[in-house]
Image (tube, rainbow, N blue to C red; front, side, top):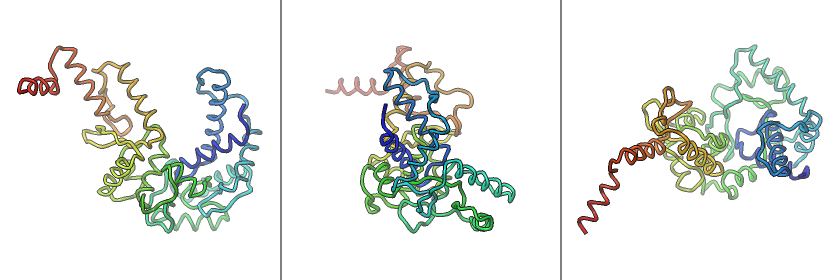
Length: 307
């Protein structure tokens, strides 16, 4: 059984990988459950069943939250202040904020990171345009929460940079807006994110984002896989930490599926894009199966004849 210190280190790393968006209370609970699944699998020598263990009860979650929020690298809210609120108190505050904003007909969806605009600190998201009404609502109700989102947990800038880039804070090596893109990509973990969705979430110019993601790929921070969405070519972007796992999952799916099933009704969409590399492999597998020569084999035969 791993120690509490091991768990805190695990949580710090997971929160750091959430990037500039930080982690919500529900995220923290999921991380704790994932940690105990991994720990149980390691001890038993068997793969995890994917279900939370019964040992993760509310009392334990409250204790873990207490020690996590006492860590000097942890703060609640974007103002960088530490907080002594319990897990239940934070959840109640977030529920109150959600209710107040809903009564004022304000969309306060916290499932996607805030749009990234000009920022006074590299790697830190600025507020969305038009957030002043939300600020006024929050202040009028005396709720200690940052605008546009629930009260979330953040780690230090240095830890965030090390988790996302593998090196220390270096805005010359990785410009601010490039880091903002990287932060959003990492927050989507092994699922990755489509480039049009990255444009939407980041709020950056759609002509600039492809250049930034190409720089991120060239520097080895992400993988950039071509996909087909609504008959348009785009890319699925995955942080390097999850790229291998995503590639292995895609490879396993390719081996187990019928090449004719690569494209299914409704697959060529934002929710389920067609992997062009998998499609190309399926096409050439089908050509070999039908005893037809591929363009690569044809080229090799022509070259060998000319030598």
